[in-house]
Amino acid sequence: MLLRASPAFSLLANNGVDAQSLSSPNSLSNSLTSSSSFLRIPSAKNPNGGFSVSAALPESNSRPLTGVIFEPFEEVKKELSMVPTVPQVSLARQKYTDECEAAINEQINVEYNVSYVYHAMFAYFDRDNVALKGLAKFFKESSEEEREHAEKLMEYQNKRGGKVKLQSILMPLSEFDNEEKGDALHAMELALSLEKLTNEKLLNLHQVAEKSNDVQLQEFVEGEFLNEQVEAIKKISEYVAQLRRVGKGHGVWHFDQVLLQEGDAAAA
Ligand SMILES: [Fe+2]
Ligand SMILES: [Fe+2]
Image 1: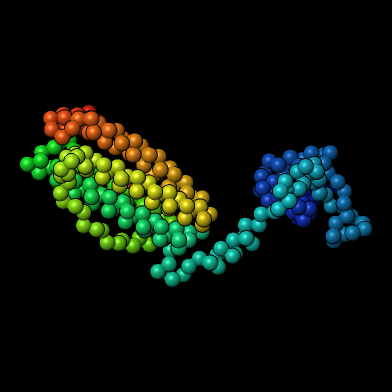
Image 2 (image 1 turned 60 degrees about the vertical axis):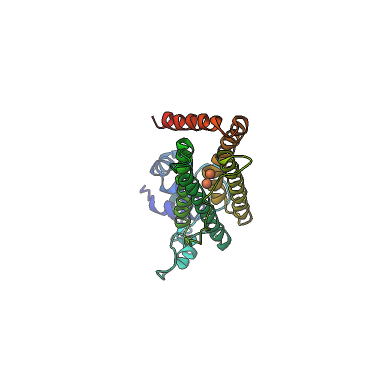
């Protein structure tokens, strides 16, 4: 007797076998070659007389586990109709709310402002009549780091299909001396406050992402910023504590030398 396998394929599809098992050559050929799994059933063309052959899969294989059949070409139709055609609109943007976009732009501004203040501190400590090279170096590196943060957020904005909108940066102080505390402690306390403020702003950004159900943005803020922020607060707190111990004169010079060597050691 001639066995025709092709109708079996269509019957299998109608019986709800998922696309994965059909596309797998092994699973199909196993089913077709296993004699115990062959059934004789009336074909559509020849309901009474002839028989065609179909492969019956074990019951556990014949139903998708979830009860849902993924039909990619049907389901993608909606997405396809939503792909933007005008060049001004991002193609990549998906589930990225206006609130998240605005909050990222705000955070870019925060990072730039902090970077600007640290840059002003670098310029102050680098003056010939101040000459605290360790502090100058520390604040220069801190300023660059904050700018990098701003840039990282800019890249993220573009990645999600938002638009970077830079805002104004405020003019920072240029003098950091303080009669009671001296310049080093005064500047370091200012830095500590700025890092804590930045941390608060980052937590606000995280909250906006949470409200928008944007899991990816939450993960980005957590992974790329929050840990580092806590580390920075700890480090600067220690510097403040040390500067409070050493007073304003020779102690500050010694602290500055340690900071300079620490930087050199880290770079080496
Ligand atoms: Fe930062
Ligand atoms: Fe920072």
